[in-house]
Image (tube, rainbow, N blue to C red; front, side):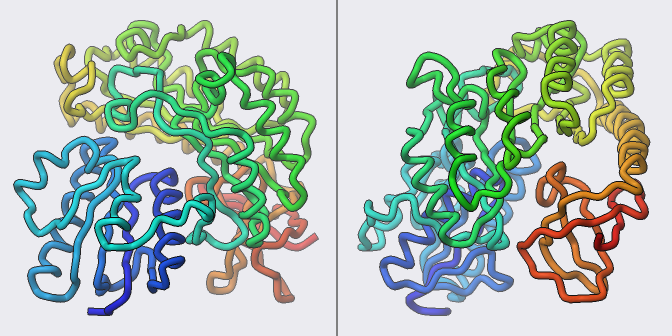
Length: 431
């Protein structure tokens, strides 16, 4: 066991990662040695930041808690604390089943871990973080919670109503990230597009993005997790006109069948969705859209699913992910709808949808052959430097594999001509 040390394990999304990074900075200010996601957990204090979004994520979090509980019983770690979404929702049930955990903290009260350990919370560095991503990019969370009320989603049950951070607070954190060498900021929230509505009674995301793009040193600003209903259309001219705002938007659409959208409580119709997508592409030429779709929602008929397949073929999303519906305890759909579609049917629909998208993605990538793109170098892997264009988010989107006859600086930009494309990645040479 390493005395005077803290190991923090983060599960789930990038929003959790930001919380972990801020907690790490607080421990460092107290003079403790802190590690993130170590290969071998061995600290005097171990903190697990959990995810509770869907069943698989909950299972992963519980398994990690149990694993660390065994390490504690064996004397290989000291104190064990749990924080995050799973703990927010289920701590009363879990604390009786897993007595090895010394303290359960939720999504917002995790600063209390410091107090329990006899340590001080340093308010003067509240916006400081230990960046655990590659040093040239970082995630910046602009809000907590969600007001949308989708029938399948447990996030509002765990995080509560939407709470926008002040613009000045966000700008301060962005400047601190740039001072650490960050060039690319991934703007995140459960729902970016609602930003400001709880404060100014209208969306103010466009104003925030414009002010962030004015900060010297921010080369790329990328937007994640928009919502199609009541989208702030004044954001589109900012994306079009600002060179450092990536022509990229991540908007989860979930479905296109009107009956399914209604049961999902998405507050948008198929016709409105198509009109919205058409407007985005018209206002921001060349934009790459990432979306997420769901199959197997209760009551989804073959006709509903076929509409979804045709929608994907029609829209030709540059980036798309999909998942099968999983009933989550406490949600409206779990309480009011029967999960009436078998796992076999869900998986068959998921596989079919992803095969359609794979062909679309391959075709879109092939169209980039012969073109030159400004590319950020993320890392060296074997004989290839691995980079991304402005149309690619870390970890989820295609990468550019580059063979270079000279050393390329990690975290810097180079111009790359695409020479080859496959279903998942692009290949290129320096231009």
